[in-house]
Image 1 (cartoon, one colour):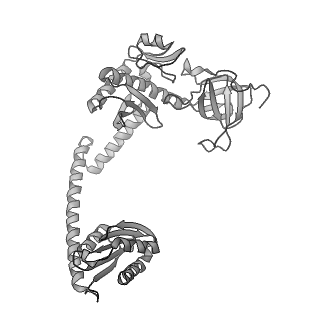
Image 2: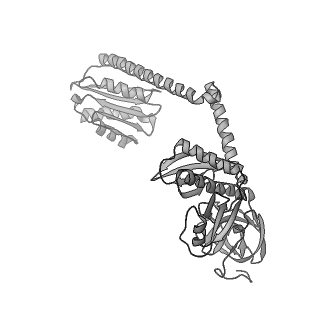
Length: 416
């Protein structure tokens, strides 16, 4: 450690973002910079350092919001952690214990400010209008989520909450920071009370929201831009609502419309007709699949009849039919094997050299065990599969060994 460095744990870090989330640059003194412990950072750096400053504008991961990125002097900030009263900056090089300049990655910071303030506003709308409290929040790389507790939010509830939040954005209401004890904030009507001692920091949206929070936020609701609720899914006893705000909402809306337009072009319909066009396409697909299945069954039955006529029984009274195909649908092979096995004392051993699939089937009167036979073949040639005593299917590792595998299967049958 360089001369002039104070020992770690000597004082609390002053959090500049508490009073001004828009501060992009700052100066501070490095109090300590020590080698980081544990594994290398996710960014793949071989060596990282943990720096503590006397003050910082870097936000640490906390309360569902990810940490800031940026630079401190010549060092790149890889992670920021809240350790008791100190903010630990994980950097990619050692910092001398001298005054330094910090620079926040502003696009990332402002995006987080939009998402987090939007979450406050959206959560307030869900609770005020529909009695659905937010129990958790996560600010992700692509989307944000809040978990609501209570009744399932219908599509109408989601839409109305989004619209109500949008109205607050249009009114450009002031977003400010308040400080007070839990008791003082309770008298002011906080949305969710917290059980903490001392002075708390709370975010207030004029006339709408008051909530204890240590995150970074915009100055007015107009700076959120817009809120777009994406979907709602069940998560244990709660309901997870996915949403995006600001620049993310614009990007998602533009991307979604591009996908809608491309889908409409492929379906040869107008964008507003995509849902009905997809419904028709799915109905046609289901009908075609049904017809296809029926044709396969008829073809398998016809082929099985021809093969059975031309294949005599052996000296033991068994009719063993082994066939190797190339490029045949596995579904057809399964149907073909089943049709062959409908005849008494008949066993089918089928395979396809393109993919290595094998099908073993028998009429129960044959008295063999197809699943055991398949296991013995796969033990020799490798692969996986299984089934019942009368029908088993699998796949050998190397399709070029399929012919030898069926020879082995037939030998095992005759020697059983």
